[in-house]
Amino acid sequence: MERVEFEVHQPRAGTGDLVRAAAAGDAHAWNELVARYGGMVWTVARRHRLSAADAADVSQTTWLRLVEHLDRIQHPERVGGWLATTARREALRVVRQSRRQVSTDDDNVLDLTLFDEASPDVIVTTRSRDEELWRAFATLPVRCQLILQLLGGDEPLSYAELADVMEMPVGSIGPTRARCLEQLGRRVANRGISSA
Image (cartoon, helix red, strand yellow):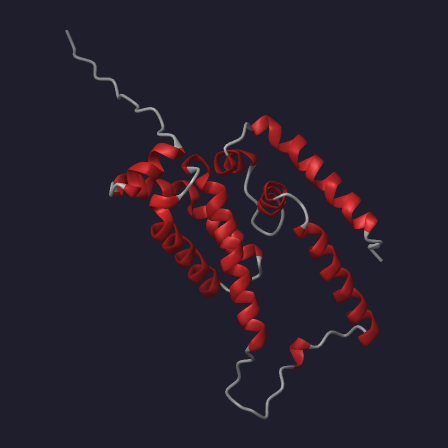
């Protein structure tokens, strides 16, 4: 009689268990956390229009922050949200720093790509509207901000990936996203922001 071997699949460890194990020094648990959330951290960084090098720095700093706080995470099961928030803060820090710096090899060279072909008043109006829109966005609950950021942009997460990161059922993502967009729409309307 031929012997048949079956591959035994271990149940997927819960996020909270992985965080606690990684805090205790389990390298396998740490690697699993990076595998689960590395793409999301990268996506959050790139969503802020950072270069690949800056996004890599943000990603690395985000993981460093997790190492520094691993044993103090209050809700280990929500580490995906913690990572997304930390990556967002680090990306914004890089964006703020880059606004202060203008790189050039020649002090006499002016990069004309920084100028828009639109008239100055259109540029100012558009910039003002965008800043007001981001202020309205910042008043949304953090969960809504994360969901909208991770589903929008150039490299959006799939619903399955977002469900894993946010630890929510896939079926609730669409309705939750719709409610978040409705909240944002109300806030934008209350601030008198127009799309024109």
